[in-house]
Image (cartoon, rainbow, N blue to C red; front, side, top):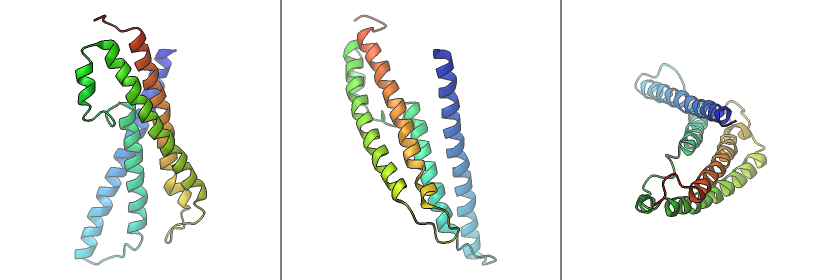
Length: 167
């Protein structure tokens, strides 16, 4: 069972990374093309802002969800946890508190991003893309964040109850 979950985790993480990297490459190409067209006006990129907004949102939110899975996003600068790690039970108890707060943030983020996505009835100006597509990256990444925050709480609880090394 755990092996299957790890495979699913790896596939979700790889998909999120692939989307973030592909979008970054597209952003780089489009921004370079926009700079080129400003110096050599051979074409009109009147649609540029619309696509950049879509791509940037997808890169930020799917990239954040990928970092959430690997626990690299929210733990930057967690100096107190390092000091508490000397006592493994205390370190895991602190981890439960932090992950519970993180889960609360993810739930609020998911709720409001879902509301925003559901209320978006208009379309973009140039391509007439429904704004729901533009905003969909937020509740999807929020759901991923909730799922992995719950997983992290369970891992921390197990570590607090049954530490690997008794201190």
